[in-house]
Length: 58
Length: 281
Image (cartoon, rainbow over all chains, first blue to last red; front, side, top):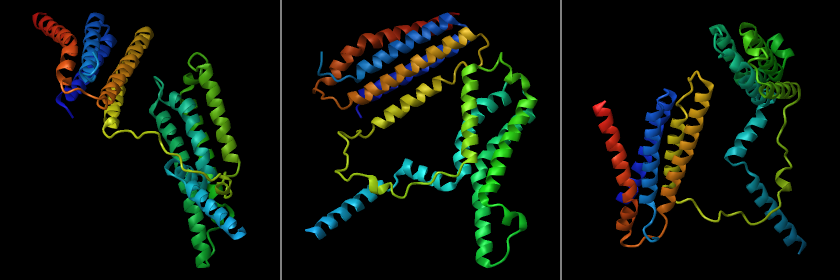
């Protein structure tokens, strides 16, 4: 397992954590906080997938 | 020629029989079919219990005896096959030793004892639950589709309890057409299952959030968000697992980091902004 694969997995786990915090905030009716966590989750998930993709394609 | 032909046929039959030998799910079903009618009736019984009895027992305001009665009903369904096996075993032991079994045991077989325990234990406990929590059965709280499904479950339970046990067909092996064993096109590489399992666990953890929200619209929104996020995380984990098997250039690491750097930078900015806001608040 390469270091970048580990980083990708950690980013996806961080995205899951952010999504969970977002859902918790949404259930507390803290909509701004929920939106923030959901955006952070989406960005972390996207970063994780981009890090994992092989470097052969442009 | 004939002998060779019959030998070939016998070989094919043996092959078919060995292929018909039960695997793990098939083994469980074969074992279940050998248990008896009470075990087979337990499956629709538990289904009917889950749809019609459990929601009433665990409804808001239901007293604790209702929950206890509901648990007794499940216990009656689950332990009926054990009752059947225990009585049958004790009767067989009494026959082998040449002593007469007790009068009641002599009159009733294991299947009858199990049926009495399963049917009456389950039906009476369900009746107690509904009597203790009558509001759960009112038309305002009982969904029509759920009620119809519960009706089907109870009907199947009655049918399975009243009928004889379905036995495995001894001629099933001979009906299998001999042929080459099926081979998978490709095998799942090692490690991919771990990624998928982690993704599933993360997606399931998200589903634990938001079950005690009072406002229905908010509860539906939270459910929708958690399900969507769970699918996204599972998709991300699957992408990572699949990407490990793609061909990689020697300078792959630099390319990957360069491609991901805008997203990582955005993540750092968003994370830093959140930390700063929470610190200054």
